[in-house]
Image (tube, rainbow, N blue to C red):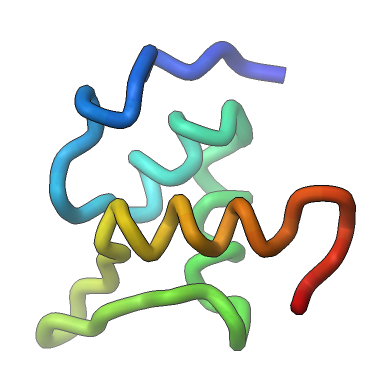
Length: 70
């Protein structure tokens, strides 16, 4: 597993792209990209670009702790 370069919530930018999501989670860039295409992932499309607001990213993570997707 890769080590996240972000040490706190405040270090994150307001919007994260797939590469940033991967860095935060400590996974490969391709895994971050795949996650951005999951139906329940809170993605905002801006033209052809996909980003996720950091608040929604954190909420998504909390919903999925322990394998509970609800």
